[in-house]
Image (cartoon, rainbow, N blue to C red; front, side, top):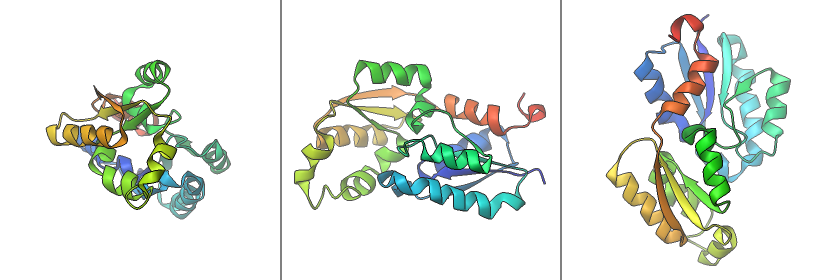
Length: 201
């Protein structure tokens, strides 16, 4: 039983599959939870635990494709109890940008809202409708009033996604910045944690 399961956020699904297929890591399988859980992070730990327990007897190893993601350490507590590791960092944004670049962005402007390719594509569904901003526009300054900048962490060079990210920044009334990240940091995280040594070269 050589299969390795990655239980991941739905926001990472396409990126994880792209990295796996580019490296022929055929032993990796993914089960993804809804990306909408990011709007209710308190539900993430229990949902991850349920997935782990349901899959434990089917895979050689289980790994979690979440960062802390706003759970306030609760996800780490669950993973310690279950004996499962996760991706490094406090946010998936750190995983895409790399810790050094992400920390520099955070220190330069703590009031930064981040988008990935997935969030740029689904901004309307996950942010506007997901937070009720379409029905209650008066919530916009309450939710985003402390933000000053939107940084788009782009995994791919895509003009359409760039345009959507710019529109998102305009909608939120934030300064716009784009950082091309690629998949290097995500690939490194997977290579170190879930790729056997004889396959990682």
